Image: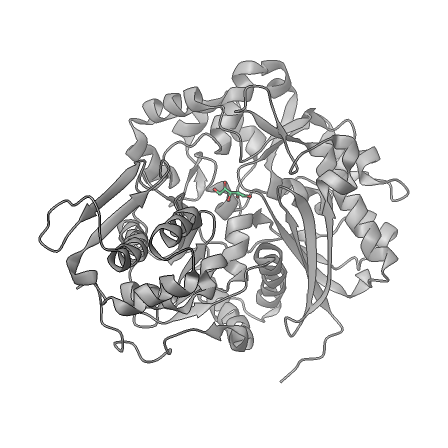
Length: 531
Ligand code: XUL
């Protein structure tokens, strides 16, 4: 039954190439969307793909004021289109993960005093100690990564605490580089935000807390205690704890929008700002993942998202705190050899045709008579290895397979790797497990059938276009709905209530999930490949 829809919830996504917004009503129907493309609509910043790649090819930054000006532009576009800001009950958002913003001393006061007759980029022009923010594409901090792992006693030890071994793009290593190469600006910095908490600060008119989920992508947070790991802070830069503020749950209601937005755009003074988070956690919410689910994006590179209850961090893959339920976790695993490898095998073994590729999958049995292949055309991320390896049913290494066998060996091999790495991180297939597939290859039912067989679970296809900002619009609704529920109960029960409300949201949108080749509720119909 449709609910009255005079209220709406905004989700923003400050991604690498553009700023996007969606508005959903109480029925989760999208009622507005807008975007600002950085390269074309803010050409004065001369970015390519939203970033500047420096001459060393390793350093990648974005001008922080470009993001501020993009917010001026998008709100201006919404106003010009007649969008009714007074109907916005709550807003939230996401940012590209790992990127960092360095607020100069005195900026908190400037944020608090923003005058509604000026655009944000004029008001905040002098607020940033570092004007070019390092972003997730930066890979210039290998030295800092080595130092951090050594200081913590090794890569696994760092992963045990923070959920990931040291990665160049992770914020702690970026901060360590700034402290080393630009100590003057580090000292001038009053607050360090992630792109997500920086964006939330713009709406709040004050420094917004880093949320647990995006905070897990810094190599700085103890993901089980949900506080900064003092050993990590000490290894990165002096006085860092004071510059980061206290992290908060991703479901936290941070406060109401600054009077700047009330006066300039007509927002209600009661419009709540829910903590912003990273784009991948935002997508997990947008895909409405629940405990036991696994989402697999089959694109240029393949990405796996998991909802995990009891994580076991390893040196491959990332564990983040869960953005929907603060007691749970999510895992993110990236595989570099995705669609390019599938396309190569299609060219070599299926005459360049997806139809022939499908025929090969149909013509070969589940388990491929024991023939297994590993196809890492380029250096893989998970694990760091390269090369093509084939083993036949007799456990002998072989140089090649017949074409049909090769096609199945590739697809089974790719999906087996996803299951094996997910299980290594603590993922368990449950009775109610659903596999949600997205990305280019998810349109091929025969590939999805292999996925269903490998995971012994039904596969659904979902459209993840805009999933990060949509997920944050859902999180905004979730945040205020949980808040409105008349409860005075201890924190220990609250997570359960949050889950309950989230499940209600999920039920209301379930019919939009297209069921794929195998039926929900018929587990066991598929022959398990792994026993
Ligand atoms: C995740 C990562 C990217 C960015 C993209 O660890 O680095 O997915 O979040 O915006």
